[in-house]
Length: 321
Image 1 (cartoon, rainbow, N blue to C red):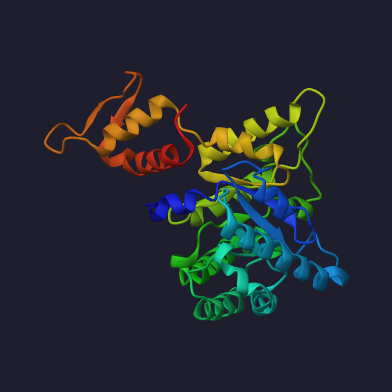
Image 2 (image 1 turned 60 degrees about the vertical axis):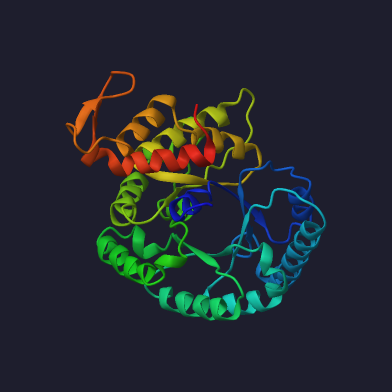
């Protein structure tokens, strides 16, 4: 039985696809994307204004195909989320797809902020009253008021107050990297990480400081998926190392080729896994500090307990290297 923290960590590699894409259902059913990923069907930035109605119809058909086929045969069913356009779009979309909510995990809220957080929350609670199952939400922090350093911490704390009201429904807090980069007219290349961009890395640190002690915060999107000599992959690996070091868990991905890279980087090293197990099973009658599994560092029960719980959860979900 998956526990609460594992549920949040299990979002992992979140593959984005435009809701207009009519091949997604077949790819899911045929397990083309593998057996360890989540899926976001997007009705927002990827969809032109005049194609929204068509995208919702295709979204309904995609979920219907997955739902009906899953009744007939066994295949890996990812956590499926719908990214709506705005708060008042939520109820409209849900009513169109509710017949197939058995295969739906929840909704993604773009540009979640002080001005729209209450509306997102209220409409989401209405949906959960209508639904036979518990649905989840993942707010995206990507609004301009967060980019403004003068008001950032006030805005982040006010946003957190709104998210806190929905805590039992929040799987991840997500961060919109491209929106923030757009504010500063910046774009990284495959030999650079998001951490090399000082205004963005500082912003990311502020978000982690406010949210990561209580929420799983996911890593920012990596745009590259092809290059002559796998430079794109090396760059993604480099960025994922920084993600993990700083406390981001999981990653928004935009191409299936990125999924396995993310999953490999979510695995736990043997040394970390053994240390985590030792810390969580420490004899409370003994000295509460000792040598690590490999004899290279110190393990201290009181100060490493949270880290140890994270490592064991990740090891359970993604494996041990």
